[in-house]
Amino acid sequence: MCGIAGFCNLKGDWRENIGRMNRRMHHRGPDGEGTWASEDKTVVFGHKRLSIVDLSANGAQPMESHSGRYVMAFNGEIYNYRKIAAGLLEEKKVRAFRGTSDTEVLLEAMEAYGVEPAISMCKGMFAIALYDKKDRVLHLLRDRVGEKPLYYGFIGGEAFAFASDIGSIAQLDGFCRPINRRVLDIYFTHGYIPAPYSVYEGIYKLEPGMVLTLRAPFGRENLSLSAYWSMKEAAKKGQENLFRGSREEAADELERLLKESIRGQMEADVPVGAFLSAGIDSSTVVALMQSLHGSRVRSFTIGMEAEGYNEAVAAKEIARHLGTEHTELYITQKDAVEVIPRLAYMFGEPFADSSQIPTYLVSRMTREHVTVSLSGDGGDELFCGYTSYESVSRIWKKMKNVPYFIRKPCSSLVLHSPLAKNPLYRTKGTLLGAKGPGQLYEISYETDPLIKRLSKTHEYCPYKYNEYEEGYLKEVNHNVMLMDMLMYHPDDILVKVDRAAMAVSLETRVPMLDKDVVEFAWSLPIAYKREGTTGKKVLRDVLYRYVPKAMMERPKKGFSIPIDQWLRKPELREWAESLTDRKVLERQGLLDADAARRIWEDYTEKGIWRIQIWFLLMFQSWMCTEYRG
Image (cartoon, rainbow, N blue to C red; front, top):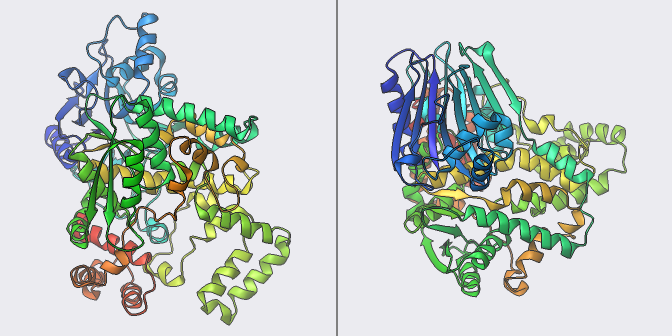
């Protein structure tokens, strides 16, 4: 795990600029640093290294290919690099490797086979910058699901820049920090800024499964984007070619694929462990790790004394049953208070999933013992785990028999009547107007007019929820699961895990996002995933081979904290009051001060806006620290 950065055509001192970029992402790679510049200094790469595989200087970056034609800065891991290396040697594409790093193997594979053919044979997580010195072409690539971040854009005229950390781009000469006002409505609806957008105007996130190509002389007209893999196409192909075996046979195959993924992801030249909650996903990962490991696996969890939030007791019971070497940490309000002022720097742009706090705290504890930790993320989205999926299916089943031409005017009637003043009736009225289950799911994110006033703009960015094709997949649950895998999962869940863990230089790996696991999951019929209100059926089948069913049948608490309670106590309340002070809001001029104050007062006096208040506070925290606008 590392951080990469670079630029083309930047005026000014190239050493000073790349040095600032590297320093901004020191936490992503504290073990080493490197820079590279083309002869004419038109193209410059920077790299911060967290040593995981091949700890020697042979793994240092930026790295040049054996021929000297290509140079690469790489963030991530290629789990099947040994197999690719063997093929390169067998085909005599490479005589010998200088070291044992996946970086060198990947670089030589790209020279031998071409960029897209090479990346298509890779299983892993990555953000890559590759420069072809002969043809003067820069390639940026991001992994299939979006585990590793990569920002890019033109600044100060015709200079092009990219980095793992958006804060690194903000360090460059000529960067004037214009805020992208058009994304504010999306942010205050979802609590994150989705790809391809960022908080800055003109700076974008490279989307998962994409290749950006920029040819000399590196102007805007020389940039193109293409896809080497598509989640939508994988889902469509899977559902058109359904798995024909029994559910037990499906569990057999899923167990095999997960073991293969976990076996590859446990490989490292540094200590490896895993996060363990009391949930199905992380318990499955840890159980399979322990079954593959010759000694006790290291597992980590955090707990809270607050009623309704503590899963540490159950996680400890699971760890004891599996025989892991388990470590737990109980966190307090004081722990959270100490972390909150640092969140804006960690994430680089506004981000407001409050489980970012426990994710950071468990990562910090884990990093004291290991350098790599496996995570159970992805199980809900791939195996129909969220209760909202069942809700959409149930509501759509009731609605679909009423023609849209009848429902639409009824929806308008409710929304334009006095009933619309009541949030419950307003929601029901909006739901009536849904064209299909996808739009029904999208409506669950609809925000109150007061929240829409907050962003003080009538310019909106088109968002994938609005572009999603109704009925793309035949089955209702699969449609909404795909929506999450395209949007919520890469832009919220994976952002949270990457930024929180990398803030303490911990590499996280996600076995369920292995390409073969993902593609197999899409081939399963919905009956193998959900039955009534119970999701993840086939995943449970695998887990129950290792952990007694009775041990797992308990209400899910989720990876959350009682932030709502803590904000009402003096220390955090004072912080929140300072961020929502009317004078501060009016001086910044970005948000509607009346709307912001109303949200804060409604929250403190009536207990409403419990989700949106965190969205507002995280935005203001970023404004007052990173942006200082």
